Image (cartoon, rainbow, N blue to C red; front, side, top):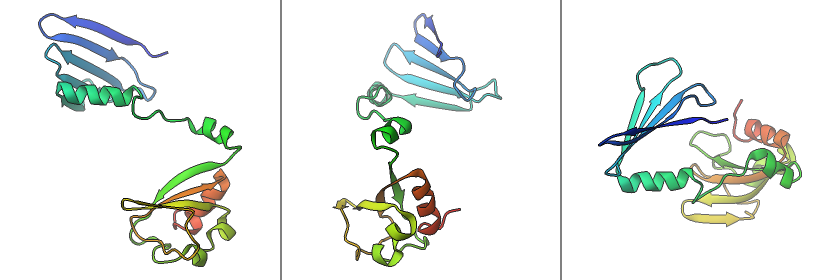
Length: 163
């Protein structure tokens, strides 16, 4: 259970302390009466904050909205995997030097070697859904791929050269 302690600081504002995160760290949030927000991060090992972030009122509200899930609410992987009957959709950013750069999907034999299907390529501001096998992969492309966990593991090794 998440426990947050609240303290009123007369003439300053309110202080909220998350005593222990899942990783054992602590977070203190100081909300000033003028809307300024300070976030103090304490690593498990340390008495003094290791990071401090100061946000004005507008920035604090925007970050609060993001944290509250207003713009995006992630779907836990296990839930999504269950909905897709064991399939996962993964995004892979291609970097210079990867073995797949300047090669076509056909040439790489992605589906044959790994079982993964490339369902889209994000290139700059352009989305290429259901890319043709002859499309050549470029550094900075983002591949959207679907497959099982095992297939994605094969893909990372065979196509991206990881592990």
